[in-house]
Structures are given as structure tokens and as C-alpha cells.
Length: 319
Length: 320
Image (cartoon, rainbow over all chains, first blue to last red; front, side, top):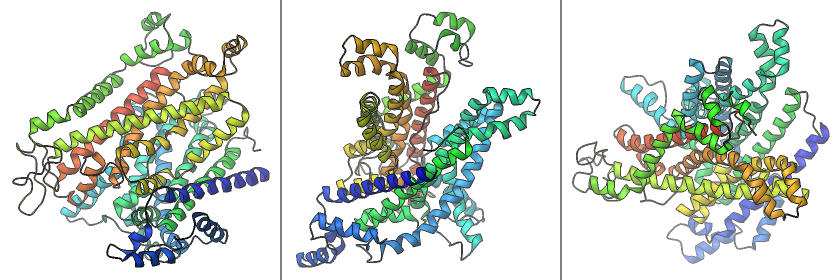
């Protein structure tokens, strides 16, 4: 286990480095000049040159990259081109929003998806199963932003017309400030994210559970005279959750790096929204920071998932 | 490979008598027969063909309705307050925030969706198959290198990287296709590699090798034909994902450049007007939903037809 963790962590660091190089290189491929954008439209060439010098953009690419790596090894992601604040603190203020959004949605989609999957698998071909399939395919086919707009229309606007102002159209209230307001502002974004993701989970649970339930040891369990419920939940579900755990790790890891679309639609000031803003402003240090944090989340999630395998399925050995 | 005895378990579509008729046909022929008897598959195919026809005939629709895709109706296009006008005989599905015909724009939007969706899928499939087969058949060193490459691509925060990339190189139709393909090929590559690894141990590959067949020939003539089913299934399932990806890029303002209508940028334009002009968001929204749903249904049907035992597939997702 320890050897596995060390090896995977080292490998993860290599992947992170590759991604940082790719992101860094990206901004030197195309002819563009962040200094010009930051200096503004009316700036004289002297001002632009001054800005360029202040941001260190007039140094050779390799020197810039060296400074970047040097800072990074000291845990510093540099300063935003645009607002001159530290990227670290910028990311830290945005992180709680994204974490609240991702974790809340994850709870909903995981419980909902697995529940629907189990119900479908209990009686394949039944009305419940077929109804679930329709809902699942709709979920798979609905773009996130479309669902978000629909929810805002019906739950904010239509309810507002009849005098119910329970659901806000967007914005964020920190958990520490008001737990109720926090949940109230996040309900619609949670549902949006959860609905589009739950589809995949109910599918995975269904097919995996059906697969498991046709195995010999399940037949043995039945032959022992155990109730069907006990067979399904105690014997079947545990081993059929492996693919669900994999998918969950990857999805949660991806989301923690910023739910770009959901945050844009609901105006949530999370990492995803920051990413879109920095891309518009060509704010290189912030973009690299977010990409690195997001990739780190994905890599850590993958390691955790692989380690969990061994816990869920005794046949798996880590090496 | 599925033998005749396994086919009786296929599902509700196959009856005993059909199984007898299946005897002596190739796997693809069997799948085709199953697909033709699948009502969902037929309906979704008809729907997709209809959408393709509409996309091809977009100029005809424009002529019929009487408005070009970027043409502003300066007389009746907006209300006196400057808001979009609802459906009427003049504008069948109303107008947008600039007084342009929503129906004509939505019809033209189908073109972008289909071109990017199909183009990106084709490109991703090509790259994925080549890399997958090479990784699965080549020496362990090459395999490790290519597998690690796929791992890196799959652990990219891809929507994030995609918008960063587009912001630097500038949005265009070509860039959309390349970006989407770049983040989709690895999932195909992984499956193809796995399948190739098992196929290369089969006797027929061994036989070909012993007759002196070159590596390239073994890959293309011996291995590739056996990969047609999984490739077909994966490709059909990537199409709707690619379409949603394109719509998402356009929605974020990083897809095809305006004024070219896409469903994504129409929905994005309609956001401030969602409570006064439902048609403005409904037309592109429903069209997008219908197209992705049709491709998803077809993809599921193709998978059922080609692989009755329903292998689990990893779907590339563009959620968040």
C-alpha cells in the first residue's frame, strides 16, 4: 500500500509538471500580448512596455518559466496580472464556493443515482426500469446550461410571479455567514449538477448490479435461503459499486477544479467563474493556477479511487 | 464472438423464429437486422436524418420564411421597447434580441452542431484507433509511452484547458473541432488498446505472423476488422457528447464566432430575455435537446445490437 501510494504520488507530480508545461507553452504559441490588454486601449507604447517589464513579460520564455517553477516550489503561484493580488489567496477565496457546490451536488447525485440504479436492477424491464431509462437518457442529453436556465425560469421567475421568492436566481452566501442562506442559494445549482450527473450513476449501478447478480456466489447466497433484499444489499451491491466509485472519484475531482458552466449560469463566484474571467483577461498566472489546482484534484481523486478499490474488492491487490 | 446459442438471450426484440433466420450471417449483418427491428433505433435515426436534411436545406428554409440568418428586421423585428417579438406569421418562431428570425437562426445552428459533432467524432475516432492499435500491438516500451500519454490527456481538466486554448488561438469552427477531438480520442484509444491486447494473442494473428505478414498488415487486415463493433459503439456515443461540448463552448462565447448562429450562442444571447421571450431560448434549447437525445438513443441501440451482453462503456462527459 505504501509503495503504491509513493509511486502514484511521484507519477502524479510528473503529470502535474507535464500539464504545467503544456499550459505555460500554450500562452507562448499564439501571438498575443497580455500587457497590451492590461494597459488598456489608450495606452502609449511606453506604458505598454512598462507594464510588460513590471509583469516580467520582457524576459526570455525560459527565464519566465524558471521563475514560475521556483515560486511554485515555494508554494507560491505568483501574482495576478490583472488585479495584482496573490494567486494563492485568489484561489483560496474562490475554493469554498466550488467545494460547497461540488460536494452538495455529489451527495444528491450519488444517492439518487445509486437508488434509481438499484430500483431498475431489482426488476429489469419493469415500468420503474423503463421510466428510469427515459429519465436517464434525458439527463445524459441535457446540456448543463440549458437545465440551469430552465430551473431559474420555473423556480425563480414563475414562482416569483405568484409571490413565492424562496429560490434566488443566483449569487452566493458563505456557510459561515448564514447556513440557511447558503443552502437556499445552492439548491438550484446542486439540482442542476446532480441531475445531469445522476444519469451516469444510475446506468453504472444498474448494469454493474445486474452483472453481479448473475454470478455464482449470489446463487449460493440465495440457495442458503437469504432474503432477496439481503442478497442484493449485502452481497451484490458492495462488489458492484466498484465502477461507481471510479466514476465518482473522477467526477468529483473534475468538479472541484471548478464547475465552469453551472457557476457561470448561477453567478457563483467559484473557481470556474474565475477561470472564465481570467481567460477573458488573459491572466496567465491565474489560469495556470486554476489548471494546476484542478489537475491536482483529478490526480488525487484517481489515487484515492484506486486505493478504495482494494477496500471494496478484496481480490484487488495494490502493487 | 457471439455464437447463435447466445443470441437467444439478446432481449425482447429477438424471438425464436428470428434466430433461425439469423443463422449463417456475419456479426455486422446480425447487428443490422437487430437494429432494424428496434423501434427506438428507427425513430431516432429518422429524427437524425430529418435534422440533417434541415441543416442541409437551411438556405431553403431561409428563403421560405423570407429572412436570412443574420438579417435584422428593422421594421417589425423588435417591440418599441427594443425587446424580441413573439411568434407571428412574419417570424414563425419570433425574433431575437437584434430582431433576427429565431427559426432561421436555429435551422442554421443545426449545421454548426452537426459539422462540429460529426467532424470532431471522426477525428477523435481516427486518432484513438491509430494510437490504440499501435499501443496494443507495438513493443511494451511504445505501449507504456502511449498509455501514459492517454492518462495525461484524460487527467486534464479539459473544459478548463479547452477554454484557455480557444482564448489564445481565437475561436473558429476548425478550432472547435480540433479541441473537442483532442479531448475525446483518449477514451477510444484506451478501449481499442485493451481489445488489441487480447486480439494479438489469438491464433489467427499468430498464423498471419508465421506466414510472414508485416506488422502494418497485421494491424490493418487482421486486427482492425475485429474492432469494428466497439469502435462503432464508442463513436456513436461520442457524437452527442461532442455536440454538447460544442454548444458549451459557444455558450461560453468560445465557439464559432458571431454572427454565425449556433445553438450555444443563441441560448447565451437569450439569457437576459428568458422571462420576456421564451421562444428565444426554447427554439435552440429544444433543438439541442432533441439532437443529443436522438444520438444518445441511437448510440444505446447500436450498442445493444452489436453487443447484446452490453459491455460497460466509459463515457466522456462534458458536464460541470
